[in-house]
Length: 532
Ligand SMILES: Cc1cc2nc3c(=O)[nH]c(=O)nc-3n(C[C@H](O)[C@H](O)[C@H](O)COP(=O)(O)OP(=O)(O)OC[C@H]3O[C@@H](n4cnc5c(N)ncnc54)[C@H](O)[C@@H]3O)c2cc1C
Ligand code: FES
Image (cartoon, rainbow, N blue to C red; front, side):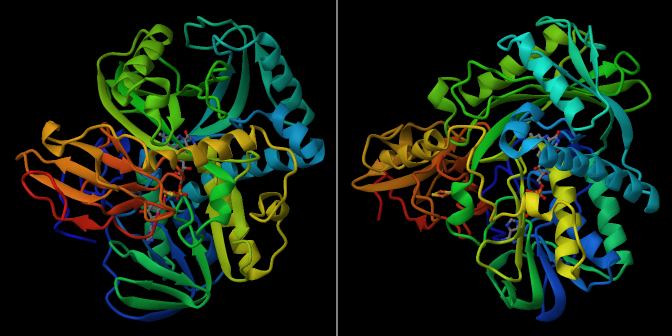
């Protein structure tokens, strides 16, 4: 970790300039850095919900485990989630039935219900104080969708054995877009950072080792190299949200999307603790139709916080719809206020990244082509349950125990049909390379305002430049070290984002999201902005 990192934000704490409600209301989860070589049975890379759950499950099964995290725990997407713990999958059961058939879709539904139960059992067993609650969830129609979609989904949830109800109203919400909703009982919610703290303490209690500020620089079948030291292991679990051990294969099977969240206080008791989701924007240009998601988190004796999300776009492509990041928060606020008029001023806002898999299911299991490297990725908007399943399934694979879901989530599965249009998404990825030879957003770095960045042309080079609060200009390569995508400036989170597979970098060039594993090359810049 480069301590001379140019601010605006500390990427050890979180992966963007906006702090989430969870990060703001809990202390950083720090452990020692790795400072010596070590040997273990399993090394887990990544200290989000997937890595910590896996480490916990493996220790429970009697394995020796070392976990390394390059920031602090929860500094990735887990700390930026909204933490609905649900079996109401965002790609819809009627789509899953088409893709996988009824029998497998029933298994999928069961797996997510089992994940919710696993979370609850663990919270009770370890006495984790994380505001966990069982709550109802309500799926209602988006203004752009038709009543028939809701009916189809209801029928499908029944087909796969879920105990849902069709209601002729949407509880606690101004149902602008239609009265009906599907109730999903027995869902869950918690304060994610408090949950991760509980998991990490349980891991340490069982003899597991956690190292933070420890980035795995090399991952191989014999273990990892991190901070210049080696961790030798028989099994390696890569729980880095997007795999950093695989250069291409997995990144053609999932697409990165950026999603936005706001939080506002409401008087305590005004709204029930529930989850709400609309069915998504059917007019969207994106294959993964953005949808709104809302819930309520306890704040203090007088207030709760209403947390609403949505307005997604493909990473680095906010401008493809002509809706800048800042406007997405305004649209989200307007949408939320209309349906939940009790909300007050917005106090929290942040965005985060989700990986949408080609066929709706996460990829959990052996990395394609490997015998002892495992991955957990592609968990879409259902990462709380997918990551939990990740820990359960990978533990069973490692200890050789049968698991009813391992085949379903196998990263090597071949799904002939997909929910979206694979060629469209793949074409969108390829189109992002065109910027290499066409014009850039701003000609001269001097034109930037303080705390603003851009990717500019310098001859045939692309340079990521940033003007700090003292008007000093910093420059790095504007080309993604993964597979050469041209980076885009994200003015909201103050990062450079790759529109191809979603790698992200701080203004100083430090990698904060894979698949890239290396930082951007620093570039000297003259006062006249010409590049050495
Ligand atoms: C705004 C938003 C809202 C969401 N809402 C929900 C929701 O309501 N319900 C739901 O189920 N899901 C939701 N999701 C999805 C869910 O939050 C994620 O899928 C989940 O948190 C991912 O967990 P993870 O452990 O896989 O990844 P992360 O939390 O990103 O953890 C990966 C960790 O790996 C570390 N790392 C990366 N590279 C290295 C390396 N080389 N060496 C060491 N460490 C490394 C990172 O620092 C990071 O901490 C949401 C996501 C977002 C962004
Ligand atoms: S993330 Fe693959 S090219 Fe940038």
